[in-house]
Image (cartoon, rainbow, N blue to C red):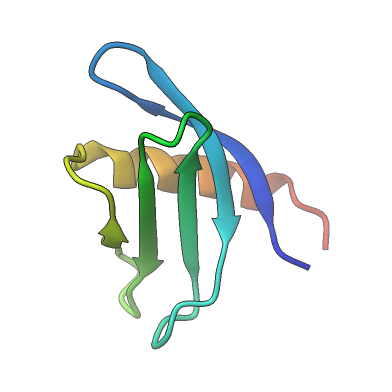
Length: 83
C-alpha cells in the first residue's frame, strides 16, 4: 500500500497545498513525489544512501528549500505511522 499524505510547501506568494506520495524510483530505497493540487508544482525527491535527500525530477522553477520542507513533513508522518 502506498503511503500518501497532505503536504504544504511555501510558495512565493501563498502556501502550495498538495499530495506527497511514496513512490518507487530506480536505484533508491525511499522516494516521494509531491504534486500541487492546483497543478503548479511537481517534484520527486529521493534519499541517498548517506541519508541526505535531493530533488531528482520536477517542474521548474522551484525553491531549494522545498526539499527540506517536504522531508520535515515525511519525518513527521513516519513518526506517527503505526506499522
